[in-house]
Image 1 (cartoon, rainbow, N blue to C red):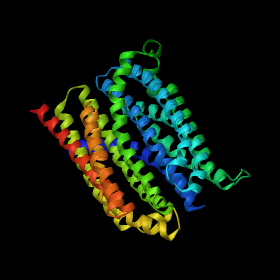
Image 2 (tube, rainbow, N blue to C red):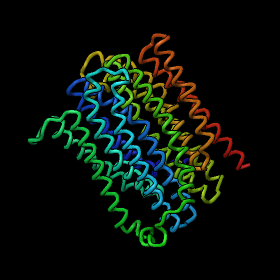
Image 3 (cartoon, one colour):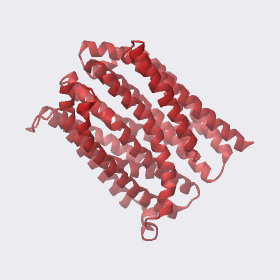
Image 4 (cartoon, rainbow, N blue to C red):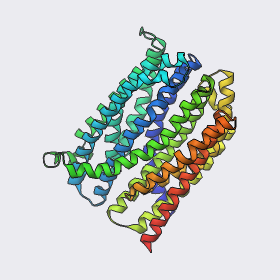
Amino acid sequence: MRIEAFKTIRLALPIIIGELAQMALHIIDSAMVGSISYKHLAAAALVVNAMNIPFVLGIGMTISVSQMVSMAHGRRDAPAVSHYLYNGFWLCTITAIAIAGVMFFAQYLLPYLGQDAEVVQLAIPYMQLMAASIVPMLLFMTLKQFTDGLEFTRTAMLLSLLSMPINIFLNWGLIYGNMGLPRMELAGAGWATLITRTLIFIALGFIVIKHKTFKRYIIISQRQWHLKKQTWQELLRIGIPSSLQIGMEAGAFAVSGIIIGTISAVAQAAHQIALSCAAFTFMVSMGLAQAGSIRVSNAYGRKNWQKISVIGKSTLITALIYGIICALLFALFRHQLPLFFNKEPRVIELAAFLLLFAAVFQISDSTQAIGAGLLRGIKDVKIPTLLIAIAYWVVGLPSGFAFAFYAGMGAAGMWLGFILGLTAASAFLLIRFLRIAKSRNA
């Protein structure tokens, strides 16, 4: 089991580094605009919360590419790999354009969400640019899922790392008006994100088409690159439930953020700081979950249930250890972490308190991600989607609302709801995976 854990970690490390780099872009944006004022930070948080649900729905659709590519790769079926790449890319292109269009028009709903008027005014131009950036980002994610499914995870990782200095440089110029550029503040961060995402998508596309590593899948394009209804149905059978699973979790957090925004701009800014920290550590869990899912999917392509069981259990143990470490770090450094985002004393004090709640749910947050990933790897997505819906929208969000407003706990009440929802999700998903693995090995 230890050997399998190391194999999963080795596969996961480049994915984790790439995910952390992408998350770092959001944190960098928050920190750089937060240095202008806490209302700029609150406006960035409002846009991120509003866009989280549709954006992660798109990410869920890209996951179908890695799952189908990984299963075909496990069967040593290169033509099928090439075929899934082509069909998955066009499916995700349509998805990306649709999501970007919806989010562009969603800007007109911001004034009706009960937010601070100045925050809304700052958020609208930023939202327009972030909506446009969804297209290149989801196309980059699609190609990344293809390379990840083949267990070539370093390419996308390097591009994600490269995107950080590019984004920081563009932010420095466009947010603050350096290098003779206009001072655009929050809108400048939007332009920097759009340009950065476009560049890394173009770079990864060039690599996939031209590099010798992927040549065997490209040279057969004339035979395999055609749209096929059955292939789209296969992709959608994984993509839609995966989108719903991720979307329901992100949706619960996004709705909570909007609800917290009705309390005050200070509460929303503090919530965004704590959530950014929690989301950053969650990227490691997501990387482990993706690696575990890819390895399980590869074994599933060969119908090797003993291998599936060992990979699943070893990945779960790894996630438990990681969750405990994160919980300790959050508790120890809760007063220092918020200082990276803002200097407003009221915001810092509340963010430090919310980080205690974030520390508590680190373990369940990590293990529920693993459970969902392992179940996707064995193409079990329908029942888990229902279980996740119950955990977040029946247990987590309603209890959080009750704690926040009826028990008078404010933003902390919503975070207590997060703990309950994530714990329920973790228990539901892991019990299901372990039962299925045990029954198939019997």
